[in-house]
Image (tube, rainbow, N blue to C red; front, side, top):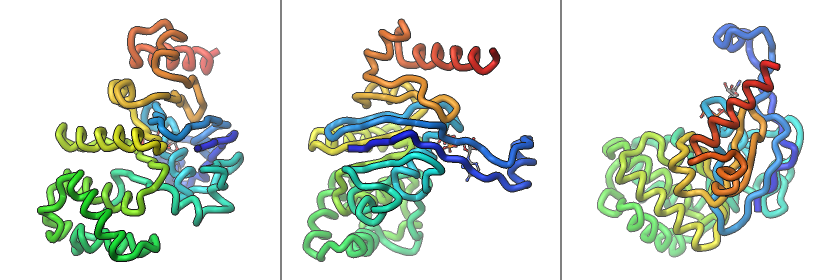
Length: 259
Ligand SMILES: Nc1ncnc2c1ncn2[C@@H]1O[C@H](COP(=O)(O)OP(=O)(O)OP(=O)(O)O)[C@@H](O)[C@H]1O
């Protein structure tokens, strides 16, 4: 289970960042008193526009950032105090992960598997399974540098999942992927859910969330604007689809800010 309790993350802005963003404040509130809970056996979606605070939230879950205020618990473990134990439970996937171009997918699976304390037999079995799932087997001995961008992305997903984590945190799972690769990834997430794992993703693609997610949280300007199942949000906003519900919430937020 993931419990986000009153999470706030404030970045300090350098003079250069202030100039680039054309702001006078030396801080940026990226996440603002966010609370939510996600459970095993569900795909939970964080939805929001660019800059809403989704990646920051996921990086806090993945122990890569410390909250400024509030707390994140994964299966009762605190992401700051128990960060090593949390890391063994989670797989954090993002398009930004870059594998070393000189190594092969097979080598990288063994390297990261041993970092997670797995023995050779466990690594080989898991690698076989993941490579077959993602269609990597025939490319396993090629250098990362020689792979297509879709294959690189699939290899980095396999590497992130080598230790068979219970909680999968995925920042924008299909961004930059072609339609076939994207489908392989979303099918895999659905399979993980069936196996009782907890999957949390961020996306700004409403149709993707509608298809994939059991529950969603809409984040606007770092704050939770609404959460629930897709049908609950449609009923609450009297909307035809999630995009429509999002617009309504966004307009209500804009009105509130201007008032
Ligand atoms: N390291 C940082 N230093 C300063 N500000 C940052 C930093 N990282 C993110 N921000 C700012 O915090 C806000 C939230 O960013 P974040 O990346 O979490 O949003 P997001 O919802 O994931 O957006 P996107 O969909 O564009 O990735 C944005 O205004 C962003 O510019």
